[in-house]
Image (cartoon, rainbow over the protein chains, first blue to last red):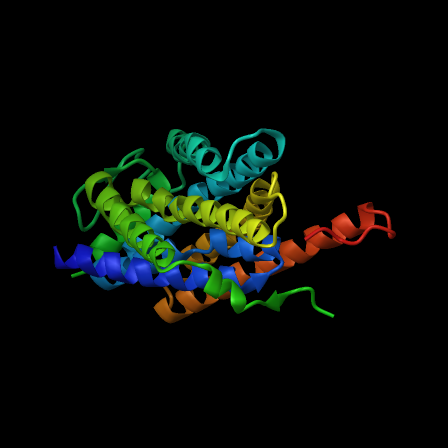
Length: 151
Length: 152
């Protein structure tokens, strides 16, 4: 429970700091860069490194690549929806979440389907700390190695 | 002269509850990512590190502020709010490129040094995002006739 309270406070503080920076910067397109700042990532990866070690954060950052590609596609879709349709910002950003979900998890699934270069060569892997199974062979090998190295 | 400038007055336009909403959304997104990671594994949780939850709130607030500003000056807001939010979204697309580089640099460096992982990835995000923004701006100014002022 304490872990999630800390997550909430740290995440809220980092996100607010980036959002305020975005508020005071002009022009608006430049301020938009801070709308895609890795604020949640900094907070989450910091906590992940502290609680689970660098190996766990490595797996998260590899999957984040798919999320970042999805975010770029999502932002372009939102921009086009706002310019070309009569949609307001709230429905446009919420509807486009479907695109983010499809691209993000589509890429992760695609990465899992492709044969990885991991040491294990397996298509599934087990998280060192939570015991849950993931989907990427390559990232799994990093966690397994970390698991072996961690006493 | 750099086209980037600070406008501290923008902070006064915001209401206290808007900052509270952003704090709560940021905290909730971080908790959500943690919950997804512990339930479905770090790989699935990692995708959520790029969750655009904050962007939804920011774009809505930008639209609201633009409409409010126009109404206060007695002008018809029209579609100005949506256009302001669209500009923010265009910037976010460039910022997402920076986020991509952030993830790659963090992945490659954090196992060697945690501090270098965080500092290097953050710097990479900033450099790539700003460079992409300048690149886009340059391309647009080349395409646009000189007589028209650059759109911001």
